[in-house]
Image (tube, rainbow, N blue to C red; front, side, top):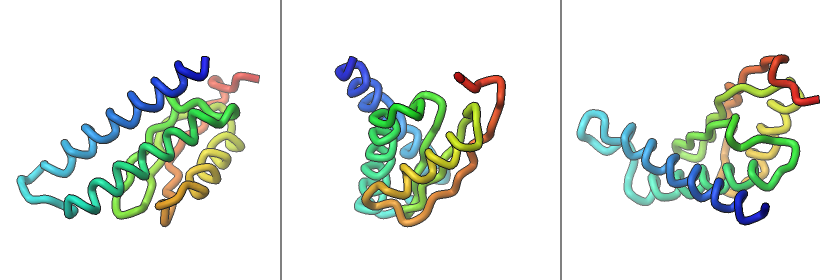
Length: 112
């Protein structure tokens, strides 16, 4: 089971890297230096891994994008407590300077 979580975290992190690269190349001009971009990709991967490791969260329901150390969380969860917990977990990740919590709450997704 732990191997599945690690594989999921790696896949999500890789997806975040490629998504960020696509946004960075929109107008042909780099929006960040290579170092800043690599750092943000690393932070995104660390946040996703923290979500995978947290039994209260579903990493598949929450997307993370990091830009200049600001982690933006999106997705939908079942309760406001889950959304708040996701933001707290993200704030605890090294490299996160600020968290923009744009997670929506849909009671229909409440697992309990």
